[in-house]
Image 1 (cartoon, helix red, strand yellow):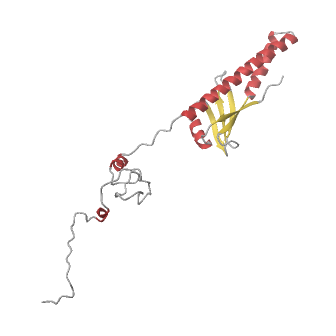
Image 2 (tube, rainbow, N blue to C red; image 1 turned 30 degrees about the horizontal axis):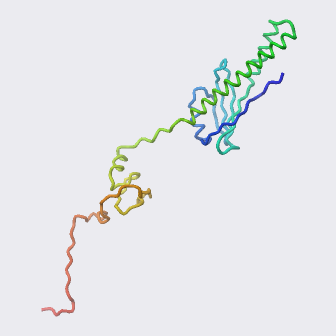
Image 3 (cartoon, rainbow, N blue to C red; image 1 turned 90 degrees about the horizontal axis):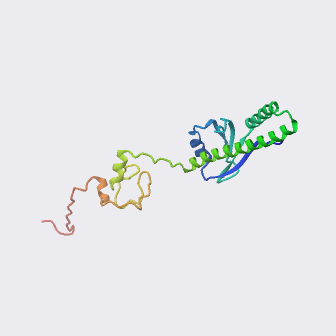
Length: 204
């Protein structure tokens, strides 16, 4: 009776391995998880009789997705135990062979379907999970509202600045301030008077 040792399938996603790993380790059904050179390994606790399954995710070969493989060693052990129990119940060898073959392949197929569905449910939840935006401090809120300050670092701006002079943030799409460049010197409240005289005129 040939039972598959593992089951492999491709899952498409643009999420890279490092971000996938961070989100996956938050799942309550995942245990003993670790990542190594594009391969994520973990133990998955399926809902099928609480069977613990080893799972590998391989991000190395595909740019927009990964191959995932789960191993069925525990399920094979379960099938062997089932055959032994049926041997005590059904004395006829031919009937035992037919009944055990049908039973094991039915259970085996259902288990693969259930484990695969549970894994893909977790994957879909990870892919659809939105990253919470970073909280803005009161100081940053003040910078955003003040057109004379850079919204990123708070540096002083003028209406002629398309880039922040300190952090180089692009400000071309931001509403311009009416503050004049001379205000940077701190002398915008002073008036300068000029007087002229002709040096060629004779002094009296």
